[in-house]
Image (cartoon, rainbow, N blue to C red; front, side, top):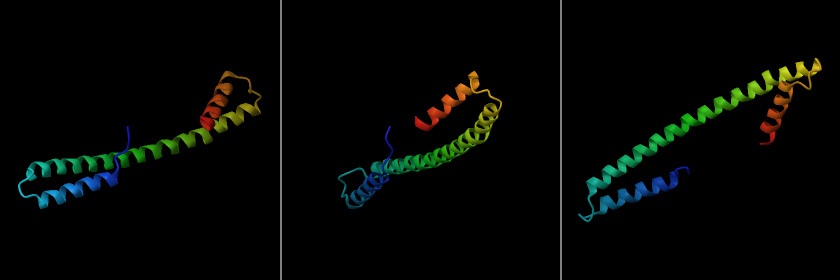
Length: 103
């Protein structure tokens, strides 16, 4: 899936608008106008969804960072202080950190 190009969208809408205004019965202006409006409406919905997705991603990344640094980091430090460096939970947490840093 590729993003919708704003530049291409505006170019098409502008070209259709110019052609409809200059048309002398060669094209069905009403039909083209309705389809163009539908295209514009869909593009506006797309932009709204992108903004919502951006907010969702930001919230996720913020919470992910907080949990990784404040919660997981603190738990690992405490486990290390108690000498629990070989526990399954500790090893799983270390593996998670490696994956999150490099992959």
